[in-house]
Image 1 (tube, one colour):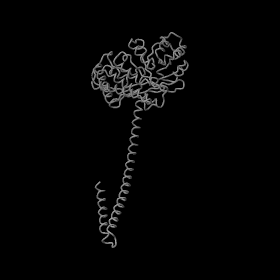
Image 2 (image 1 turned 90 degrees about the horizontal axis):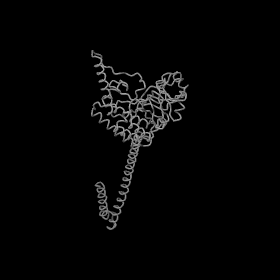
Image 3 (image 1 turned 60 degrees about the vertical axis):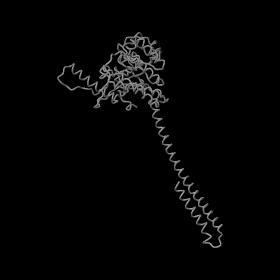
Image 4 (image 1 turned 120 degrees about the vertical axis):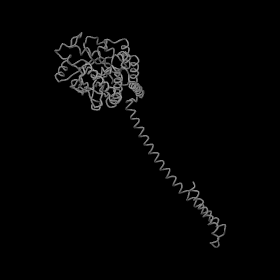
Amino acid sequence: MLYHSVIIIAYALTAVVIAVQTPVYVQGVDPIAGYWAGGVFFLLCALIHDFIMRHVERARFQRDLLKMRSDLDMAESGLDRFDNILGRLAGKDGNMDSFAAEMQILRKLLKQLSADPAPKKAEEEEIILSVDEEVSEEPTEKVEPARNSKGPAEESHSQDAAILEIVRSGLQENKVDLYLQPIVRLPQRRTLFYEAFSRIRGPQGEVITPGQYLAVAESAGLIGTIDNLLLIRCVQLIRRVRQRNADIGFFVNVSARTLNDTAFFRQCVEFLDQNKDLSESLILEFAQDDIDNASEVIQKGLVTLAKMGFSFSVDHVQRLDFDFGELGKRHFRYLKVAAAELLPGRPGLPMDIHPDDLREALLRENIELIASMVEDEDTVIGLLDVEVGFGQGFLFGVPRPPQSVN
């Protein structure tokens, strides 16, 4: 503002000088004409000043507008990236309620870890998912205690303490990994499902499997934390996979103890309710003994989950003499049996029907038969002879991290 004032004063003084001195230096010019000349000069200077300043202001305004557009583009790009991140977290349908439910469970898990829980009784354990025990593990680096002169009991205790330390460290440092094993359609061997497993990485990169840490984690009250992390990661993985392929399904083992734990089962139901849009991609798996010995609480839990649209699978099958019709009504859609029990010429499992009628009896109730622990081509040939529709085992793929699975 001062800058403009100085300019105006400058050409105003110049106009006054012209008005006063023109009659003096120019003979024959009337003083009135001198005043007119000074006034005209002032007006011309004012018009030129206004034109220049308008041009400057317009240029400044255009620069500011371009900067604002650039900032707006950057903001929109940032919002797009943020929306993309939230979209991947919330899933294809933008289910932010399920994302909030995951955060609530994670906060509870963090509280459990920070509280350093003491061992709990089996009926008091807070468990949502039970990691798989029946599939034989691929060779991994086991945790070996240093050899010394201690007795067997002391060595076992020392080894358990070492494994427990790895489990605690893995939970605190987010080293509980999700592994997937394919379940393929026979005979095409096209992968249609994956079964989820957990692995815990130690400080030296060693990997311990459920067969090594399960008992120790249960006695320390940590198995619920491990299984909850596995559930959340599996749901997040399903969301990402469904954006590219909605036909892939994931099996996750569920322990009967989870359903018996009223408080934690309620939280599990709420979490699954927030993710019921994934019901076609998430199959909950139960051991046959758990189903046979299911309490009223478990039965109600299964009904609740079935009403949400989730389907179930029976694992650890030891006999086939149960009512397939009743199983189908309870929303069980898959039956896992060890491949060796299905091969022709073998004694097989106890059942009330002829083995040749098994597949047809299951299909009538919309139940698919899955042969587990398939490890060689001869087994596959035998399974095709009895028309088994699905297979799982090391022959088709060992459990691997999701990033290494196509």
